[in-house]
Image (cartoon, rainbow over all chains, first blue to last red; front, side):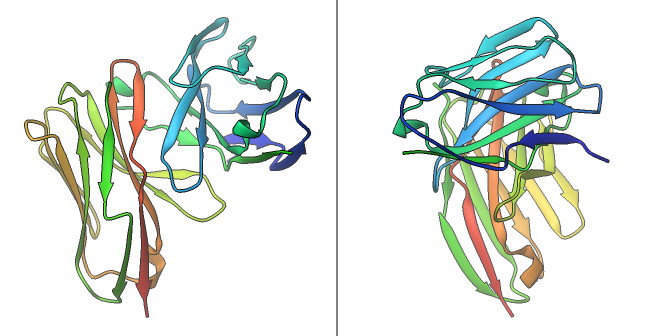
Length: 115
Length: 110
């Protein structure tokens, strides 16, 4: 039971560099999400997708980009990394939207440090 | 803008004690409210989901209530155990966004 898989688990990035956080799910879920969690804080939505080819901004999208070419994969790209992007990133998925009461499943997180 | 607040931020109790975690939200126009558990270095696990038309949900030793009109939810944990030690987060689904509180870090001492 893989569920939602994120890679890498840990990464150190230099200011100005770019990188992609990978996320894949094997539950055939339509909806996928990217959140960030800063220390002692709740999760904030970065981007979400309701299906392949469709993405939309969340609460804190600046400095990030996403794509959804397949149902399974939802990579998050950081362009020109800044120290403010040091955080834990969580990918999640659900079969339908959360307003319909579907359970959301989270990956185990990617710890990113920008130095 | 929806804001979710959890009180207390941290809680330490002896094993066996019953406890209540609180969650409040500013906009009552929500679809549902969920409680999650987060273990250190791990992702979130959904514990209970309460639809906006419901008043409470129960799962084992956990009971969550929802009062939409007052913008409040509580998570009741009965007979706490050391294995319950974790961070508990509540989140509300409104519009097209799931908004999280900052969490309550619970420590249950043997």
